Length: 284
Ligand code: ADP
Image 1 (cartoon, helix red, strand yellow):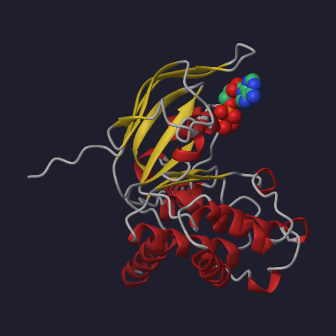
Image 2: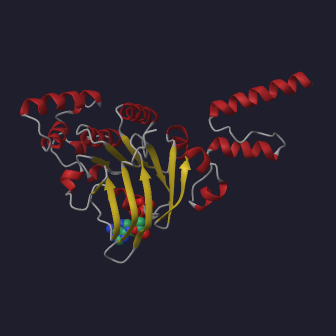
């Protein structure tokens, strides 16, 4: 059996901000190639600080970040950002060009591409993200959803191995979320490793296989999302709420309907209820 080494290894990471706020405490974490991992927890838990250590925006006070078996300490942000693409929660913090097209071109410039390749790639990316019609527009005049798309496009066009999203579904409508979930699927098929900071429990239950829960600068749980987010103790400790199907299952139990623990999706719940009612009607 081949033994796969983790792609990312965080070893005993501590971080305090210059004002003395302790944001990370002895973080140990292994992420394997091709994984899709959610990072959840209440505001101030340390999620944003943690993801910023991955591309050198934050350098740990203690401990090491290893990516592809190399300590990233000597590497600059420019070099790291070719491997780790971090997509900010607020696109305005990331976008600074005069037009949508220039934003993509600028992002591609630090790669070793000639002018023509940059041109072709820009056209391709604008098309993939349905942004062609806005190519000459200022990024400041895009809707929230469109500017989020541009922020994602400007990182993904560089093809980093590791993608890190901070609250990608925040403020997105149904169509935008399904565009995003499709994108996740495609990037995973390309073998990308993806980390997502999110408060969106229903989204995590449906799309994210592994979840890390953080509180007070520490990782308090790490495991299958369905197990973690249906654990009432952990969910309350993290100021989250149980997924809707789980809440519904507990209500059913309150009225004497024994709903199994392994029902997670709405479809599974619908099937369970349909079967239950059928049995009841046959019995009557
Ligand atoms: P989360 O992303 O989970 O909301 P953060 O990583 O942003 O948490 O914050 C972790 C802790 O660090 C919090 O106590 C927060 O107030 C503090 N913090 C975040 N950014 C700064 C900063 N620039 N200076 C000082 N303290 C900060």
